[in-house]
Image 1 (cartoon, rainbow, N blue to C red):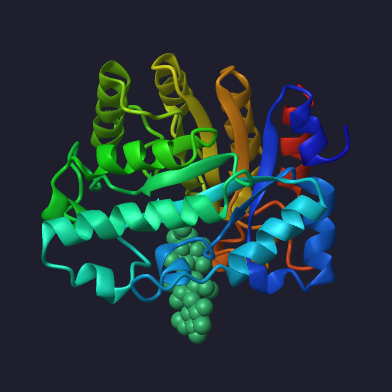
Image 2 (tube, protein in one colour):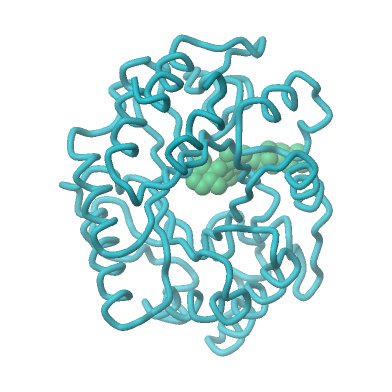
Length: 302
Ligand code: G3I
């Protein structure tokens, strides 16, 4: 196959990109998106500050523009993200009372998931809840007010709202099996599966330095999959976009049946949140970079 999406589809996988609503008017951008990618994750438009900037006041305009572009062009959609300590409006951070925050969190999940019901294949229900370098949750407003159980509560609420959507836990710096943070996340997923807390997938964000994935990356994918959840590489980018580094990542996913798809965090280097590192598969002029060819070859089984 000659495009990323078609090549990934040969093994039942998707190959996606993070998309910004503000770039949908750029025809170079949409030409590459429509041709190459089979899945879309909104880069910012489904986050709390975008969707509920004031309590009970929901705004779906930019996210709806991305969803309609996806529908019109036959793309799958990932939802990102329902509960995250960042890009959280001050009115949420300022809530002192646990019961108020609990009902605000559940109302947010309910309203957003209901609005997009039937359009989103998988949701990042909770994003980045673990603290770097430890096995523990970070001290977010949600943990401070609701305790560690806020994650379980969010997943139970999400399942009730849209039973057909896959529910994912998504985090970064959890790609190396030998990292404490990876172990903390693994223990949580294992506990959820053991107790019947609804969870279907984990997202390994996969923001890598120039060396690419850690050597124990494949072990991490294998071990999460063995818990009975799908694994998705949700925000892939690699400083310098080395060909070998990119193909190693794709091969690690392809080696595990339950690694069901890969998303790069943007399309061209100029679209990236770390643009100065040129971490993506297309250059600023929209040309395919050498890493593109190595990814395509890996998806084609080469
Ligand atoms: O839209 C406003 C604009 O109106 C304003 O004038 C401008 C001034 O700062 O800010 C614009 O918002 C920015 C937004 O991106 C849209 O461009 C925010 O400041 C900026 O903080 C935001 O950055 C995003 C970042 O998440 C926020 O944490 C990045 O685009 C986005 O790529 C990044 O994505 C995250 C994932 O969601 C979670 N994992 C890590 C990943 C990279 O940080």
